[in-house]
Image (cartoon, rainbow, N blue to C red; front, side, top):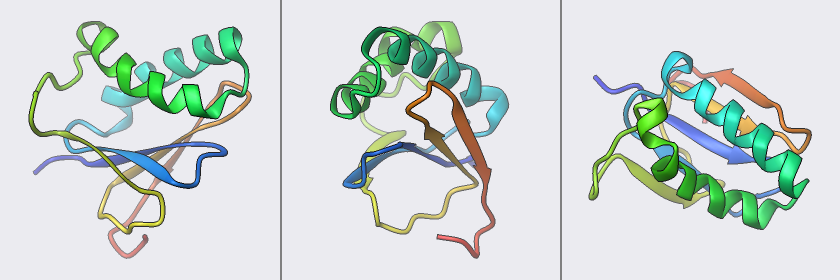
Length: 108
């Protein structure tokens, strides 16, 4: 069974990223921490660019962090309020940190 997660950008309430596989912190958190720290140092709290650059970073940083290389599945952009069954939620904060929320299947 896949460990699914969602990735939110603080301040973006229209969409979030869905990652189907390897969403547990040991496989996802280091990538998000490095991306968010570097982006925030460079661009500050620029939410529109952060969302787009997060998607691009999954390719640019994919080899370094062993991210899913699938061309057709594994990643998605979904409406922010859409309920989806995920085990983890990552929130990229405007200060460059990443909040990790472990979810149960009873949560939205």
